[in-house]
Image (tube, rainbow, N blue to C red; front, side, top):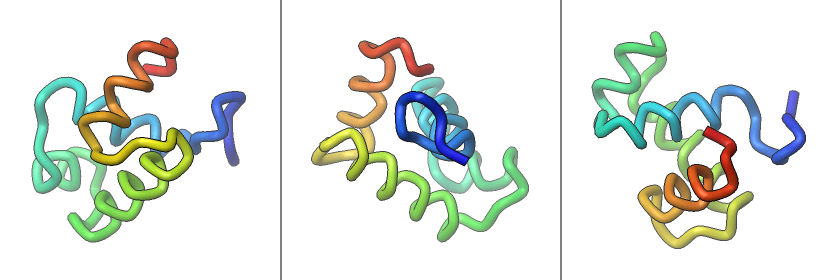
Length: 67
């Protein structure tokens, strides 16, 4: 289910963890997901936010007060 931002709760959670400095393996472990699945969520979030990189997606999410 997408939120008002168009991002799913999982995509937002992954961006939140990324914003706190966690890397994909650590995010995967915390969320009980595979690293591959975390990367998929990151790619989807990047696309939805029109970001070139996961870092840029995180910055956009913070600026829009999504996370």
